[in-house]
Length: 370
Ligand SMILES: Cc1ncc(COP(=O)(O)O)c(C=O)c1O
Image (cartoon, rainbow, N blue to C red; front, side):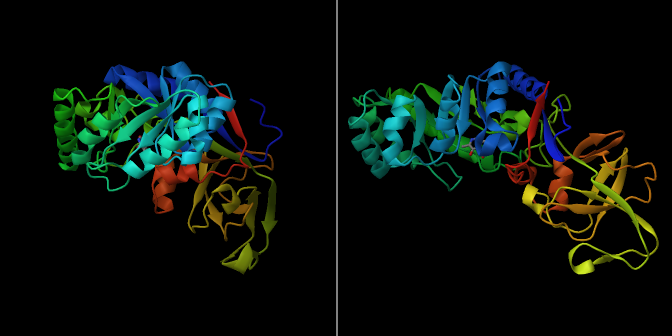
């Protein structure tokens, strides 16, 4: 991995992703759809897709058709599913590229049908059921009639039925149990009437960890394949490894005199002679403008001082006299005995680790290693 051309970059451990996927497969014993939407949770979708396949994922899940087509254009051959909305006009492309789509209401199905008729081949469909998420999904009571109408359709293969759990990261509450009860009741009815699609799936990362009864024929983990916790109350096992490190180079180091303002608005003013360093990272990279942040330099936590700019921010380096321009600085990850995790950044930014990852700007180079 040659980091010399870059001033800030992400290092992604593809071995960690493969290891995490292997562990999920061993825990669940089912097929696995690696959820790699939003640029592979910020890690870089194509490299993650290949690592996921090598780790044993049989399926890849994304949110949008553009993401699915991007995988196919890159030569990814394993099963790909669009979990969210697909524009009807894209159905011929879905058929041509053998991409599974979610279906969740009658009008949508009719629109898909009209476009499917114009294409060669059959559309791979998974019926999404509303069990309590309040997002996308057909009401369970409508599903039996829907399936009996469409199961022998000349243009549709209804390959799957699925739902999504809203609170599987809260195993102490019975919300996920309630959703699973609704889903299981429907599955029982469909099975007794010979209407159940071949594949049933429901489990996001939290349900992979907390609800074995939700594993069914396939699990759909996202955040845990990157080695991160679905929530503070649902940590990944210690054997899972985070895949991401964010680094930058110290691009300038100066001693500023007392009373010197640092960055826009001079909200930080030096109180003495202070060693102030610069790193080329800012909110244009997804590093937030929150005050009171820290990064790691030469294995020590140091303060980010003054306002974070679009492409740069400043560090107070008095505690690290050995620091030099060119040093590697860690914003997320480990250096020496110190670590700043995605959870730490999420707490700092009053958000969740998912949003930290998805906020990593496209312009950050992603460098891969195993
Ligand atoms: C339908 C669906 N399944 C699975 C996932 C994966 O979720 P997680 O990253 O919590 O495992 C998502 C992500 O939001 C999703 O929308």
